[in-house]
Structure formats: structure tokens, C-alpha cells
Length: 364
Ligand code: HEM
Image (cartoon, rainbow, N blue to C red; front, top):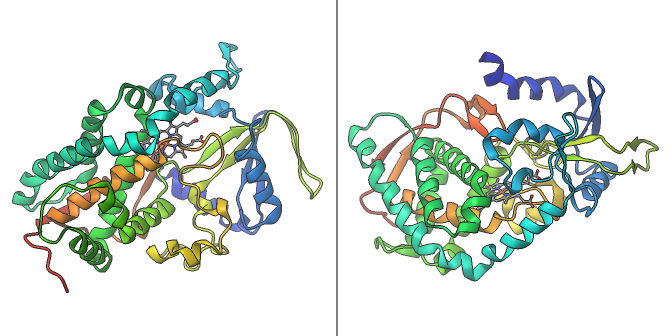
């Protein structure tokens, strides 16, 4: 159990001395894993671009198979190549067919039509939390948020709910991290609330799509949360053809390339004070200075998250409703969170916060 809880910190600690190298390899028995660790290194960034934007290296690595019991054969792992047992050898056809099928579900107009449901579920979340506010005791916000994301699932279209189950756990994790961080960073919470006051005043009307577009500061806070705590902390791709690097190295066909977002998002060469929670990292002028692949919580390229826009919309509605109703408090600094990464990054000690009623949002 201890190993599971500390695995994330253990791997990060051990990798520190190697941070100056953009690329590294590990043999696990006869299996070669290559870690791509530095997007500002031109050579490695080329490999990242080659692998993530490729129409060829689309196969999820065989290691995803370990997670199959949780996700079934949904889109997230549909081209898992289970060569060890020769059970099946899916090509990307199945993936392509599924992706084509669900793509229209994420069209902006369709997303807008989910707003009523998202608002209704966020209100239910606020009601469910009432007993925690009345008790004033610390509790795990993840339990409530996860329940709400599943409720929303039931209202959603069939394509969304069958293909995108894992998407809801990532939203729940992202939202829970954000609540804990802002519970500790009261100054940032106040800025979020101020922005919401400018949009809604004291009204408790539901959020419109246009309102969500006005939540610019909240958007930066969400992105900064996904930078420090990407709910999917690593992704893996099986390289199906040799990839030759300018340095002379070749990544051989069959290698598993590991792209560790958690690590990429904290590189001091890319983010000044990388451990600090700073929503200004996502001001346009700062974003334009970075390599596009230095922030990839939703992955990138043709196999990237199809639910990205929906996830952002859902988080904006849920989090804004939460902060319009409650003030969140938390004791633990975000750099002390004990982390656990099964496939989704979580706090191993629970997402503990307390809440108080926010009677009126007062303009400063
Ligand atoms: C904060 C929330 C989310 C994060 C951080 C996230 C992250 C990711 C990442 C990193 C991948 C790519 C994995 C890989 O390349 O191996 C992915 C794929 C995917 N995500 Fe999300 N996701 C989120 C929310 C959602 C939501 C809400 C949905 C659907 C309702 C969704 C549906 C999918 C699907 C279907 C794929 C597979 C795409 C494909 O293989 O073509 N995700 N997501």
C-alpha cells in the first residue's frame, strides 16, 4: 500500500538527476521504454511532435492493457495491442470508426445543449454539500464531485456516456484538485469570486454559454490546475515504425514511448518557478513564449482528448456554481499533497476541505 501511495513521489525524486537530459530509456525485461522529457529541447520536441501528431503511431501502448478491467473497450484504449497473449491485434480501424462516430457529439452547438443539464447537476451538488456546510467539518470533496459527474453522464447523449466514462473521473479529479488549491490560496479564490460577481452580480441564475466565455480568470485557474496536477499524468504510445533522431539515435519500432505530462509541466526551463501556482502562466503573452507541447493535459494530435471542450465547459459550470455558493477552506499547501497515480492522478489522502456559506458576493 505504501508503495502505491508513494510511487509518484518516488519516481519524481529518482528522475531529478536526469532532468538535464531530454530523453531516457528503461529496460523492463525485454521491453524498451523511452521517456520523452523535454519539449524545449529541439530534438525531443521533434520526437514529441512526430509521435503525437502522427497518423502512424496511433496505437496506445500495451501497458494500457493493465487498465482494461476499469475501462472496458471504450475509446480511451481501443487500439491496445495485447500481443503478449495474442488475444487480439487491433489496428487503428476500430479507433477511427469510434472517433468518427462520436466527433459530432462534441460540436459546439451540441455542447451548448448540455448546459441546462450541467447547471441542474451543479445545483444538486450545491444542495448535497449543504450538510457539510452545516456540520463545518472537513470532508472529501471528490466523493461529491464524482457523484455529480456520474449524474451528468445519465443526462448526456448515449454516445457520450458509453464512450467517455473515463472522461468523468478526470473532470472529478481536476475539479477536486482545484477546490483544494483555492481553499489554500484564498487570494486566488477571491479573484475568481470577483470575476463571477462581475458576471452574475448577486443573482443565482444559471450560467449561459456566454457567461462561461467571460470566465477568463477562472479558465486560467483551471489550466494552471491541470498543469500542476494533470489528471492523466502520463500517456504512452507504441512506436510502430523506427523513428530516427538527428542525434543519431533510433527509437526502434515496438518501443513504448512514455510522455510524462506531470513532469513536462514542471520543467524549470519552461515555467519560471514551476512549483508555484500561478494562473498568469496562461496569459496569452506567456503562452506564446512556450513550445505548444509544453502543456498537454489533454495530449495533442489526432489521438488527443476528444472531450476537451466539453470538459472545460463542465468544469466552468460546476466550479463557478460551487464558488457562487460556498467559500472553500483547506489547510494543506498544494506542494505537500501526497499523490497517487493509478491511471488518474489523485491525492492519496483524499481531497479534504471545509466549506462555509457565501451569503453575498461583495464587490471590492
Ligand atoms: C480534465 C478533464 C480531462 C482530461 C485531463 C483528459 C485527458 C485526456 C488525455 C490525456 C487523453 C489522451 C490519452 C492518450 O493519448 O493516451 C484523453 C483521451 C480521451 N478523452 Fe479525455 N480528458 C478529460 C475529459 C474528458 C471528457 C469529459 C471526455 C468525454 C466526455 C473525454 C473523452 C476522451 C476520449 C473519448 C478520449 C480518447 C480519444 C481517442 O483515443 O481518440 N475526456 N483524454
